[in-house]
Image 1 (cartoon, helix red, strand yellow):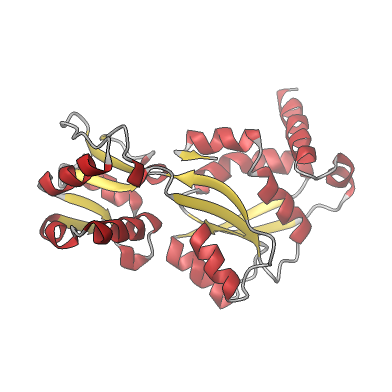
Image 2 (cartoon, rainbow, N blue to C red; image 1 turned 45 degrees about the vertical axis):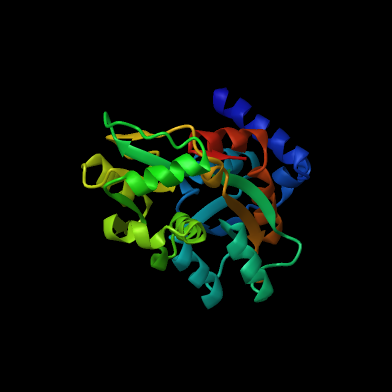
Length: 259
């Protein structure tokens, strides 16, 4: 009974997003393929059963890092929709690789700062305090921007704009991804680790430093869009709209993102 009520509630949410109950029940079941980055994947995994119960459609995710996911779109890998950073989707739109008018914003992601569990936490509540904490830290880590990390590229650009890149270089360790950066902090290899909060949520042995300064708060916008070659454009559009529902908002927050 609980599962049926759960599905009915999901259908109601889809109706509110512009998908009628009749369409959800009568249309043939579609197999939707979605290209997505890894940072938002845990929330999508939570939401997929809800959508599938409500519509009868099924979703297959193809997930990799930001650069690899972008490369798949540029290589023409068959898929119906893309979930990626807004800046990347807009760049792909200019290349004719996104269906015009289909972009919707799904969530905002903040950049988190963590220390080893039990270690002292610096005050980073303002941008200036954060800058001073970075300069005072004996070591720090964040994902390698050259590998396409959304968080890594944002941080590299921020530190360039603050003129502290050269000062940080001698004590900076670039990680191969979000979780590895936090794992360095958990092992005591670095004093501070930085990347999207969503990618640190599953790492044990760390403690988040809060409150975050404005420079790190809600800085990465995650969006969805249809691909021009989508075979299941209608169902894929319904899925993207569902990601803006109140139920989706709960899942996003549970995994370190904000709608």
